[in-house]
Image (cartoon, rainbow, N blue to C red):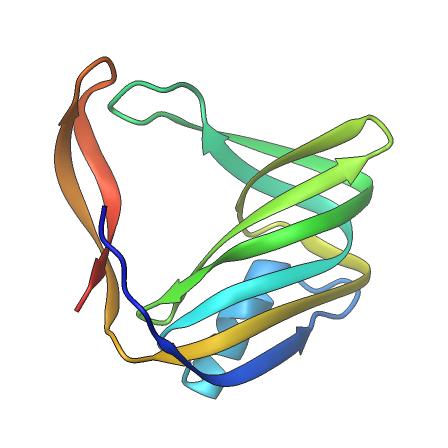
Length: 149
């Protein structure tokens, strides 16, 4: 375990309009504002369609699966980081059938509204890098590690 403390420089609020792809909008926003690192404080709204990925099991190497759906989807929460200008966002979604979540992918289309809140941060240089790990009971493989420079 390792941690870092950072300072909030600015708070940003992004509105994603109906019909827009949420992840593509976030990427465009981050690029236009020149944001290199930020904390995704939260987000909510509705989706007309979604595309997520999540891990299938608790063994290494990691195996991802992808899922898509359409119609009447509520965004209950969003969180994550922007590292080196690249957003990594997880969402919790709900339909009348229940709640589920995963990693936000292209293909999440805003429906009625979608609002996301970012805190641009400074004080350390965040980066992601792939590292090889060997975890007893899980196996050996590569994982993405957050680094504090």
